[in-house]
Length: 260
Image (cartoon, rainbow, N blue to C red; front, side, top):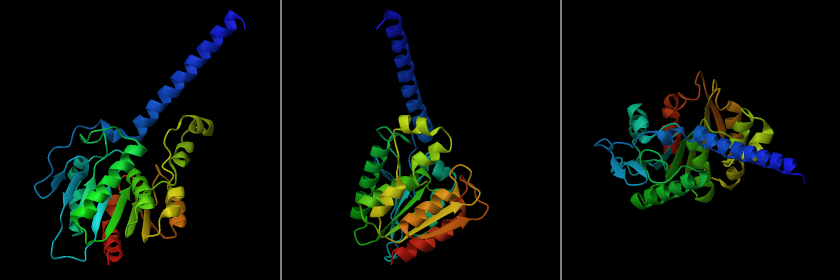
């Protein structure tokens, strides 16, 4: 092999490595934007801080039939943005005790965001919720990326209910709508395969999706609902970012029914 050819191959290899590492960083940049936010402040006085996990509310002790909820927010959110938008007030208004989970690398929680780390923290949150409310049924609620984490959690740890808002079927499927397939196959490091995970879920489930969602198309929610064998409910006029704010009533009704 000539010296010139060796040099050319070295340059090509260096360029490919740069592309690989650069796109990997870009993927993480796009997938976990909320991890760049400032640390969450202390929670409101109505909520308790659960170090390393999130913020919780014990609900109304006399309402013993209410399920306990484990809530997963989206990839661009933190608990503080959920609080400032009023979403945590809406969650508390359901009257059910809850833990709103924070992700590793988000809001000052130690660690870095990844599928492995997010699902591991979700399992810790579920364990905490069961210990805190041993006699209540558990319902998981996930929005966008949080829906993917909720599906992964429910596939490994049986719960009594699962509610998904604006979910994607597989991260690969979303990426292929934005990038060439060869690039996705070569450079996508995380998959969040909810369709595969759905095979291990047997609890009552509900999938809701904004019918005007341009970021994660409603077809993703429909495919996941079919895999779960549950109802798919379109949210009229809702896009991606406002879907959750438009379906709290349905969330509360389904959670209560699943908790009986």
